[in-house]
Image (cartoon, rainbow, N blue to C red; front, side, top):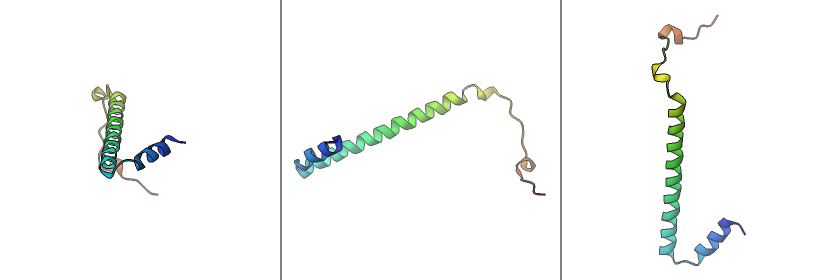
Length: 70
């Protein structure tokens, strides 16, 4: 039996108000996980860009961005 099946089996035996509590907790865990993933993503981007603040970048103008067709 999978973990999901075991959870569903236990959940069926609980009264509805308790099932709502379980749902709230599951939603909290999902939100917490997304928040942690977002924080790691931000940290990764920050680490990847570290030191680029002092780089010299070329100055582009509008003509540089226009595609030319022949």
